[in-house]
Image (cartoon, rainbow, N blue to C red; front, side, top):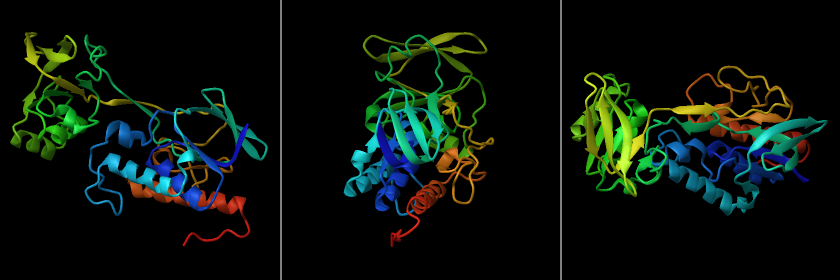
Length: 320
């Protein structure tokens, strides 16, 4: 059985920063990320969106933030402490240690845990129409991985909220033609985003349902139906971005009872949860305020420092 002083659960920006601080404190640690890539929601949902709330990063995008964090960890020779495809399914309190159970059957023993799991697993809502699954990554997307995917394309963005308009504005200078398609006559996005989209000659179709996505090897068109007249028409489209919201699957650890409220795990001033030596940072913590990255980074740094102090009560040297 592997043994560490600290297990960090979650490989988003907060978990990665916690790993950096753990390395600087020379802790024995492992970071466990459930998916096949680091970055959490920043990479899975917003890789090309500007990062406005992280200090010292001018004109950076989400993927730049994660790349820079990974470079910092690489510089500290800590990449080997990061593990992908390692979903934690339970935490068992075992006297003065914890047993961390993974979906693959492995069990890791640790003295302390930092939870940096965000809001949980984010799964995009689907249209559930013919062609959606068949053309996934062949013209059907749920977010923008690379703007180049849409260069010179005719693009339909499904949805009328902030995410839909954010994605549309993100690629509007790359696409040849771009539509916002909304199932009713209400747009929930910020008025400034809607106006900017119109100024850039984006087209808005209201009261239209997408009833199928069509093509041979990849997307060639979509069939839309008017909700008032029920009339149908085919719209020649190369790419479809489905931005109708997300489902959140919060991670559960059935063998351990962590106090929580509607915001997340309840933590004290040192970011410790209701269970001694289990800490939480970032979106998974019960922070009733704006979810700035800087707050999560500060929580992660403080939590790891408190862990280092508890494990090394004598002789802990300051980092600076």
